[in-house]
Image (tube, rainbow over all chains, first blue to last red; front, top):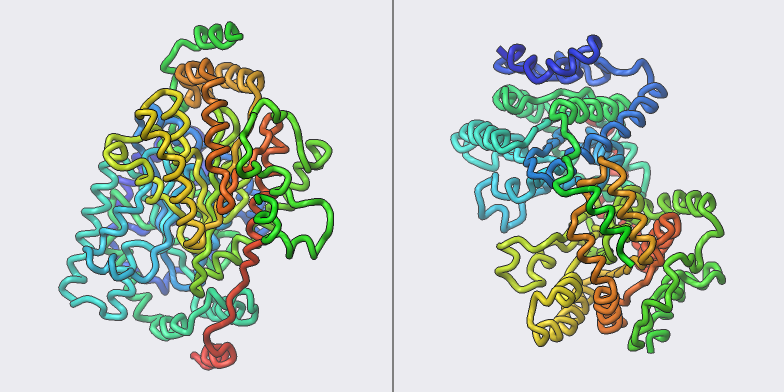
Length: 299
Length: 299
């Protein structure tokens, strides 16, 4: 089933250049299958360049294509195109959500990006349904929205830390799917990325933060408490990836132990989705020659 | 008066390296003086590098310092520091507001930037006082906010196109000053930049947009109507720069005919203001060694 749905938007890409297969085919969490994260190698580089140097060069080239496509998407919105992109980044502490924003989104034109980091809900946010704060942070037409954490925290930390009754939690998966389906119907292309980091890699990264006083602000002892709950979080992720990898908004699993692969893969995923939208510069809605003559005739 | 106020925050910079004088001293619109825009050369490069190549290299170096200072400002906010920056970009069509966002802000970490372009007010925005939409777009603690156009449109286009009664308009300058004073009191450093472009340079840039179909979306025949009102706009700017160049939030005039100078100057202005804030990485609020031991002791 998943395959049939996936192939449709790829047709155009396939025609242009046969292999390699789209990265989103490789990384997509198959719809309806249960997810076993231990079966995915966090150091793997599926479909990726063969080494770091090649990946860095490729990512720089991708950035150029991304900014081009981003500008066309933005330009198209000025002529009434309401399409937009929403990149959702999820993953354990140190999995590279912030690094992705800095190194991938950092290449784009900030005028067309709307970045939002979701932290522990504020008292005001807690007074509202869990999707309330998410709705307020959505990208406008022509924009690329980036969520560093998202509404998925409400089935991840909320589940592990038992912040809501189990029955309410169970309902949230369906609420999320309907919410995302509504976004897709409204012209939002949702790219949900799970940054899959290994248990030992996380230890190394947390230790590196402790070793550098300039990184202490990124660290909190609660990060260790969360790490102690690693199996519970993995299970919560498995459930979220399984229950919310819909045809409308599939999850992509990006192995994230190697930062160069992570940046290359997310750049590629973004570009594949942008190219599938194929945004175009709008035609002039005015008489170009007349405008030129008016300009030249001015004193 | 203006001088005394201006010198205070510069003291630290001056100690470090004597000349050249801070760019913000050079570009600041003197408080209380009437402004005559025709006395400013839009092709000038005050305080700037001697040529384009030197400027591009210098701007790249500035970007590194900017991202460093930006990260320290952001990090500091995680420890309760509520300071933030607001860059306000104003100028005639094609003066380079969008180009500044792309080429200067594009170097920063998008996670700490909040970019907002103010267009013709929507029906909802029109139902509110003119500062309403501005208040909703302000940067949070630790962020750098960027306004592409701003509340100043409400004394610029509003004046030239007579969108409000003259008496209401007259009150707005004071409202703006009080609004900005309140922001400054709340920890916002406001950097207001007027991009000063020449009449002939604007013609060339508008013609270039017409010559390139990929740029037609940036053009509207109403740009020519506005251009026909050039003297009225210059006068409206002179008034706004004069009446709202306060000690708390002065205006800076950046000659903008040369893009390389514009990017260098705004990078420099931003960095000077960030360095005056001198944000620091916060000290760890936890026992680093204990955290390290806990991490190492985990299975």
